[in-house]
Amino acid sequence: MSLTPSTRALAAIFAVSGAVHLARPEVYEPLMPRWVPRHREVILGSGAAELALAAGLLTPATRRVAGWGSIALLLGVYPGNVKMAMDSTRTRRTGIKVAAFGRLPLQWPMLKAAYAATKG
Image (tube, rainbow, N blue to C red; front, side):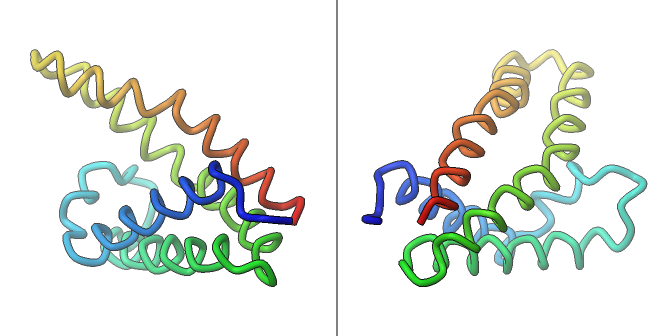
């Protein structure tokens, strides 16, 4: 199966996000739920996973397994996105609230793209 625009977009999102996770992990620390242990290590690990998944999505031989890995990653980070949205309710800055709550429904097209990648 050829590389679809949605798979290419998901790979690009993971590549950029993964690079930011590794270069500036402190950006993500406030998003971490308290119950997650070793925040810095989890952030760095998820950044490395995003980079690996981005490469996997772009490679035909690994696209299917990278699609399943992408689904797992997206579901795994969703609690952090929910926490960010809930935390944003304590600010008066509308832009932060819009961005935080806007991220939540954006997970669905990403999950859809990841699932499509599992088809090959």
